[in-house]
Length: 463
Image 1 (cartoon, rainbow, N blue to C red):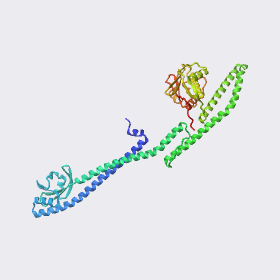
Image 2 (cartoon, rainbow, N blue to C red):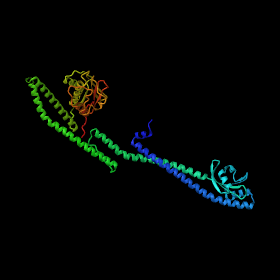
Image 3 (tube, one colour):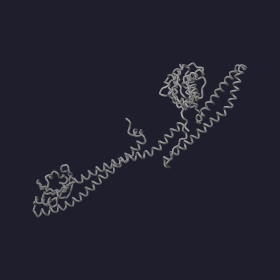
């Protein structure tokens, strides 16, 4: 079972802000309500005690004077106290008592108050008569073993406090609701720029380097937006410099490479004129020059895609016929299954994609059980190339289409490539509106699947 702290930390920031506001509002409402309730009740009860004390003193003085004149006629004293002052009173004389109300009996008088009066002192104490609170005052009378008690109802204070309690509860709920509304507004105001920065970060990660965030304020959120914009600008500049560097280097290498290729072709032409050891050197030079030329061509293609200068030439393409031609061009013997699927696409880019995937299937899949499948479903063309090789480790699958990435730990090859083939194939598929997916169960065959939308007409160009 997760602890409350871990549960709280796992929630969204909006939830935590709202919960913090609501909890703070609730705590503040409880503190203010409790303080208000007890302060008001204490004030009202103190006022009632003061007023009751004055009435009690007048009543006691009247009762003592009348008691001396009437010579102990307690019945007359009780009657006069009720008629003249309207007080609830009770006189206890020994085991006898007289009261202005049937609900007043000696049992309702608190024992502590009885002991206080027995010691010839005046005092008061709260008591309950039935379910109502009463304020009981007691005082001794001149006659032996005689005490006078007055009772003042606190029902009106209790009713007032009940109304106040309901008002405080309503006010507390209102404070909690206002706190929740404020939390949503403040949280939205705080989180909206954060969401914008997060979305902008995602767009930058997807390659939209011109993405910026509008800094509407100069507070911490505005500083965050400005910092993001500076970071994005610096990152964009760095990538643009790298792209220009790669493009310039690749372009500058084309001329010397052409000369090297011409020289290597000349050496290959006169290969038989050299000694056996020299012939090996000629073969090695020819292979290296061809490999270097392939690297430069791939770098040029990457630079073209990164610079946004890639041109798509839409034409009608029979995917089955194109795939069969690619397999034969590579001098490979792999079955091509599936119906003839015709779509509008860039034939050269599709050929480049299929050439790379078929070549990889034979080279890295060790040529085992290579087959190509063509299909179409729900407006999507599907080209799958499978091999029966040793498979690709799960940790390598997410990086297969990264540039310069090689999964050499599980795939053997006679001569290593540059790790650009799959990246270029993926970029070509993306330019055509599709993608490439790779699946490779542990220890099982590997399948690369090209998914591109089937088009009946070329898409409209956006200005």
